[in-house]
Length: 253
Image 1 (tube, rainbow, N blue to C red):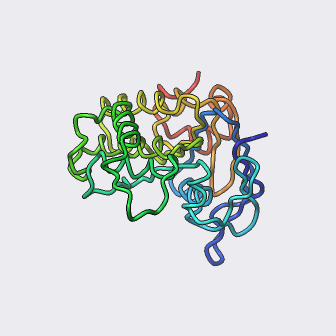
Image 2: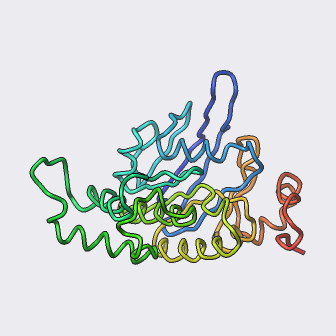
């Protein structure tokens, strides 16, 4: 059984259809990239999967259960976490507190007025472990809004891991980074998604072809191809619609 299934998903805003009859199966443990030109509907598709938008028609299933049109927090609690193009953290809270908050639900903590989080030794130790994984241990007490941009993106990844997510969705995770920052970010993505399922939207084709097991190409709200990186490289329709725009060293022969 596929971990995530999209069945004839459509999304319209008024009379304008943005996502048109998208069907896709993502297997557990798969690293899947969604690519396409600007305005293709990639972020909209992410919003539909994660519950930010309701679908106009079609169905989305996760772990065999219907999730489309559920509130985002319900979907997140079922094991799906995502990042946004714009960094989404609690800037006034410390780096440590951001991670600890993400751990609460997955570790069984519920609303309580009499539990002091500072006294929850196991919870705090797990938060420190996540910070070690993402390389931010030395920034634990710093307000997260004071982190450098690449570090804030790393914190977002840590929040996804801390939530206990089985499926992590990353929307342009290396956008705005220098080459060295992007290299570090890719290494971190590989490390923290080991054994998990990854869906990624990314414009850097070198990164896409390096990470992805399969690639789906979205053009004008429709998936025109889903295949292995090698086959996507050689797909004439894909080259015409999108890959012809990337640098020559990212193309096939």
